[in-house]
Length: 287
Ligand SMILES: CC(=O)N[C@H]1[C@@H](OP(=O)(O)OP(=O)(O)OC[C@H]2O[C@@H](n3ccc(=O)[nH]c3=O)[C@H](O)[C@@H]2O)O[C@H](CO)[C@H](O)[C@@H]1O
Ligand SMILES: [Mn+2]
View 1 (cartoon, rainbow, N blue to C red):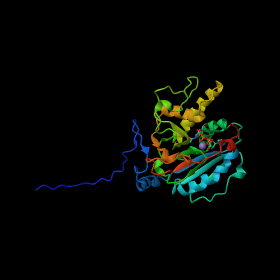
View 2: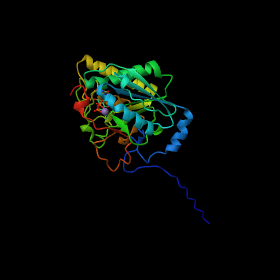
View 3: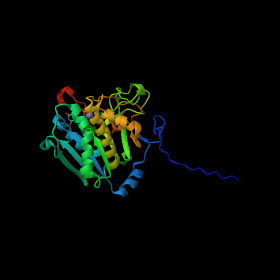
View 4: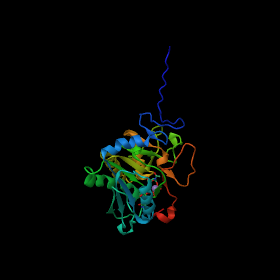
């Protein structure tokens, strides 16, 4: 008599997208993770997730939707501390925050060049971690403010050092990525190199790892400045260079950084976070 035993393992997987990188880091897609399992693990650790956003000049208008939607979808059930860098503290909207969630406004002068604003984020992030975070915070995310949350963004995004695949380039051949291609820049990536094109709108990870990233990118931005060269996509170019040699330990799929103007494709089952449509000429201080 043969007894057959069937063991059913409910394995979450996706066959239509790449869910692991060639260096074995997970790429987070809907239907690849179990939220309650992840929560049961991270909730025991009693973690704090710092979240930094810059809202300088006319970008203060994006804060309300950013914060209100984050309060619905972002890191629900975790201790979250928002740090808002702005030149207009009085314009930071009063948004009711949930339990264990707090907000600190930090005053920062604006600049008359948007490129300067985006690239200075690295230096400010480095300093903020140095001065207030090392012993207070476990994880940190630095996010663009011209964005909105539309769906669950939880502890599945946590990892040592986390990058997001830019929604504009996730099916683009490597040699067409808009990496910095001039060898004179510290952000230079030669043709044939590079893994993904990562978006500058989301940087995350353990606080010590993000500090290291911000510091190295800031140093390379300084060197470029001394040589009077500005990388094609400012700090985003330097971020891509950093991740070429320091691989992210977790990658977020474009579900975690979409663009409202883009129509949804079949592999995107849920849009969690997206860039809102903005009139560049109207919101930026310079073309
Ligand atoms: C989707 C994505 O990955 N976007 C990146 C992209 O263009 P974006 O068009 O998304 O850049 P952006 O204009 O949103 O600027 C990035 C961020 O800088 C801040 N800001 C900018 C201008 C200003 O006047 N005031 C202000 O506060 C604000 O937090 C904004 O979210 O390239 C930029 C670098 O060049 C950044 O890497 C962005 O993260
Ligand atoms: Mn943006």
